[in-house]
Image (cartoon, rainbow, N blue to C red):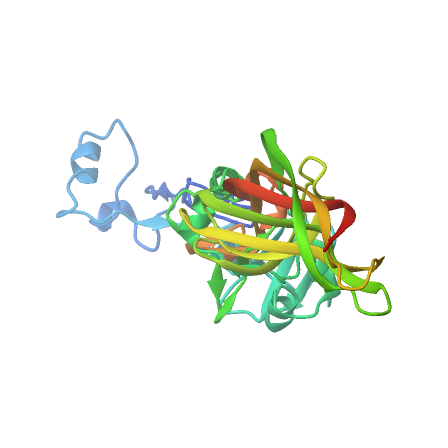
Length: 412
């Protein structure tokens, strides 16, 4: 009889080779011997040989009684050792392919080019504990190149001097702090990241997420802008008046030098009414604030201010643009002279906000490989800036004063 082998094998559905749900199966077909071809002894003299004649009344009882007879199965003379060897060789190849394509197996990276920089089109990076490589992928999961793990970590290190990293990040970390996983999950961007892992990465199981690993903060919360603008609210309340700067008595020369202040000054006092959800309790050492003019008393200023991202905290700053003005007054000997300067003081309510943006990289880890890798690293810059930004809000007041025209007065 002919020997038939039916081997079923299909590709998996997780990006690499995989086994189908239908197992590898084999079908063997054999025929039962007859009295014409059952050798070497004819059926009449051989109790173990069964005559395959359905009309034989003993046929069914003989076949169904394994305790009384043994069925002799043999291969057709057309099947010889060479055919059997070929079949076994084919089975070995199929088994090898099935082993390579098993879900969760490591990807062969020999065909992926080695690179030394982060490809500009890369949107995700895959790695494993049992290899020394991190692979960069584009949005369609096409491999763009592979880097040594230590090179990849050096390139995404926010404390490094990589100009490539600077181009990817909002800030290189002048005003940054660590970003916790809980803070990351408070941002609108998190739902997109979680959906990406469950959808594009086809992860159906649990995963872990890190914002720092290998002893470094890979993801951080940074002040989003170089400077902050303070807005005026309501109407400014202003008052005018005079300030007298006393002098001295005029000497024999008849000339007295008087001094008075000129210019302006501003004090801002603000209170945090809403803390950003990331960068919690972080004290920003200094950042420039744009302070508007109040009425006619002052001109706009820009100055650095320190503050903490914590609800209920206060910060204030006094900015003085004052100077001393000297005036020579002519008068009679012995007169007492002074200088009178017009002043304007104003107060206005104010408000503002400071953005904190999540930046850097996060890592997802899986119990088994998904899309050929156990770890996937995603740059947060893949999400829009708005979705990864949270704002600290403050309200308060601006008080200002300015010096205007002046005159001198003398009396005996």
